[in-house]
Image (cartoon, rainbow, N blue to C red; front, side):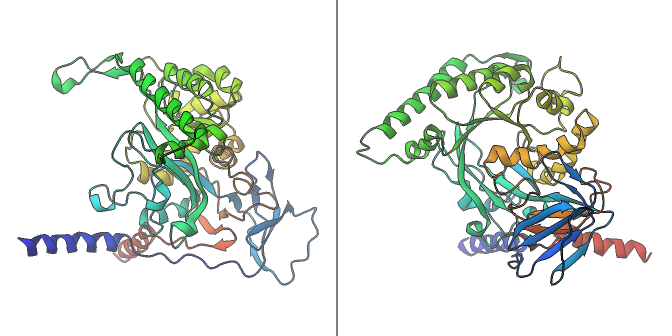
Length: 437
């Protein structure tokens, strides 16, 4: 029996090692290069029809109109991008990429910790930079992400990483930038499998659950303002949401929950707060603007939350919020349903918002500069502006359209990264098979 268990363990380890083989990250940029002639989608709402972009030491040195700027390109590598498009690298917030490789293999699933109150849990140290799932984001232009834990009332801290690294230390862009909390739902559904009415009904424990959260935050604040005779790691981790060094991300969708979460944050001295999910956020835009609260909007390709919602509400919610002056970013997580697989479709979710009212420039901001602002990395990422990181890609066509987003070159911090993945290898293999039949 012992030998059987050992053999089974070795098989599992072998399977995991096969699907998590080491990528080879790109080497540091050593030579200046220029991208000439592309339509540059800056990410801040501006577009340069024929651009010249010069990259030095991993930074954007020049982003200008080719017809106006007279620049000597001698000694540089030049990429001729006439008729093509260049974009800032897309950013995916609130994701478990790198924390789970195969849902059915428990040994590769590390997205949640046991327990209810886990603000001290750091998702970053569980991030697997060798993930084949992470690697598959890059051919669609998704180059950075906010790696976020799940579970409990307070899940833990998130960190922002770039998707071409040897390990989590190399990947880290901004460490432990936020704490994630799951707000109680003010309504529950009956358990149909127990014969209960499956319709919505008030959550009888809602007030009690809010009181528990409030007491926990008050105890944490008191601890951090006191002498700290004994170290309390969870309370220590929450200090950042009181002094403004960390953002409190609250996962909540319903109108009452969003309203209560905003008031809770203000009453408990939380400096920076973001709504995650926010299905009903369009109903409370005045409140969100009053308190300068951003929204990481739920997956666009979703069904409406309520029976009386418009059938296309998830598609047009981004426009409703943007038109109201709320800062909005797009995320893909939606109850964990195929979240990591769908993460590569982030640009196409943004494209859907164009079909439902936003301009292409506004839709692009949802997954570039807006998300960078929400995550606190906009000084270096999110737009093609001089002095920022050269994290960008060149596409044959519109990057928000799956038919034309064919990427030729991609760079992270000026390093040209590989666009080869397990999927591209299979595509080449089987395209040759059917070509020869």
